[in-house]
Amino acid sequence: MEPAAVRLSDGKVGTAQVERVGDLVRRAVGPGAPAVHRLLARLADAGLPVPHPVRLGPDVEELTFVDGITPTLPWPAWMASDDLLVSAARLLRSLHDATAPLVAELDGPWWTWVGAGDEPAEVIRHGDPWPPNLVVDPDHRTRAVAWIDWDLAQPGRRIDDVAAFAKHWVPLMSDDRARAHGWPAVPDRAHRIDLLADADGLTAEQRDEVPGAVARFARTT
Image (cartoon, rainbow, N blue to C red; front, side, top):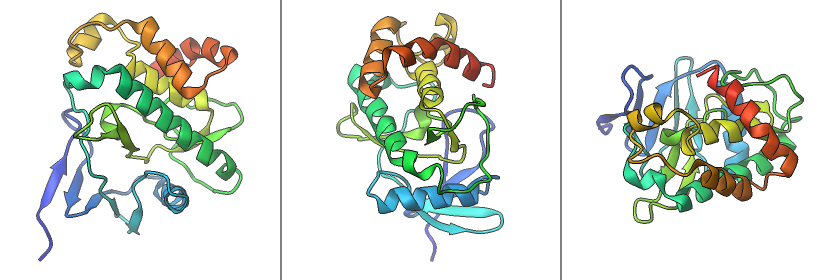
């Protein structure tokens, strides 16, 4: 008998239906699913911590479930940890490094959205690195385990993923919106941006690009 399906949620009302069935995640197929499955297979074969593609049907896809916890709205207090910010940023950088050689090898179509620019692609972006898409070690809530929910993966620039990450994790938004999302106090944004930039290895030129990239991302979300 198949295990009972458990609905997964990021804490928002009206998000797309995603279910856990035993050790699998079952979800509706998006426009870029075939390309994403090819990408995840390559990353999994290389030993990167990503969901493994299992099945791709005409309407439903299945991937392996990654054990751990994820932040859900309103954000838990542990999400504000500087150590978790650094761990998540380093993991995102490692995935960017791993996808850079794949840009010319993997064909789309990709589901292009969320702050996509017109510049030549450097990597295959995760596309949506907001908090519920990060799996965290439940025993050490300062350690990032895996980035999940790759349906918005797309060729692009590293800085656009960093900007998307910064918007939600620094966070680069109004104090009122940050409080509405559950931040217990307005964090030291300058300090957290410095931590993010150092963890991701941003050059001085790339650091200067962050504000503009964040503004572009904010106009799409």
